[in-house]
Image 1 (cartoon, one colour):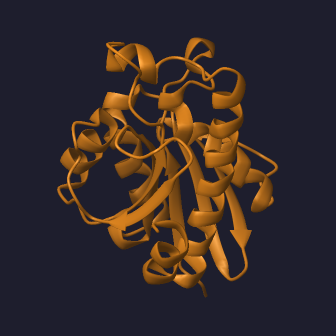
Image 2 (cartoon, rainbow, N blue to C red; image 1 turned 180 degrees about the horizontal axis):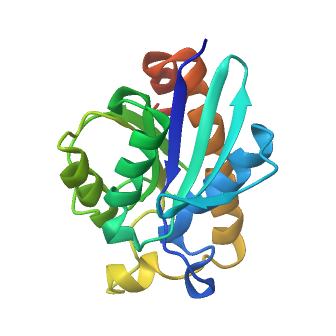
Length: 189
C-alpha cells in the first residue's frame, strides 16, 4: 500500500482573488488535478478536497476555503482525516523572493512573513514539511506588496504566471515520486 500525500495549494477563496499572484497555490492545484485524474471535488475539513493518484502515489489535493492567514486549521484537519504525517505534506504557495518564472522546493524552514505558512506552522506545531515555492517576484517601484500579490498578472506576466504554475506542477510530481534531492537538482538551479 502506498502512502498518501496531502498536497495543499494556498490561496484565498472568492472570485475577487481568483488568478491573483497570491493564489498561485490554488492555480497550481487546479492544474495538478488534471495530471492526477481528479474528477470530483468535495468540501471537507474547511477545504475543497479531491483524491487522485500519480504513478504509485495516492494524493489528496486541497484548497483551504478559509482565508490565507487561517489555512493551518483546514490543513491540520485534513492531515488527521487522511492519516497523513507532516513528512507527507506538500504546501504550494506564492513566494515574493523568487523570480516570477522560477520554482523552488524545500523541506522545513520558516514562514518568511507569509501568513498562510505562519498559520500552518502554528497549527501543526512543526515547520518540517515540504514546500513548493512559486516565484511571483517583488512589486515594481513603490507598489505596496499587498497590491502586488492581490493583483492578476497581465499580458507577458500572465504568460509567465501560467508557465510557473505549470512548472510547480512538475516540481510537485517530481517531489512525491523522486524525492527532494532530485527535485531540487531539476528545479532549484
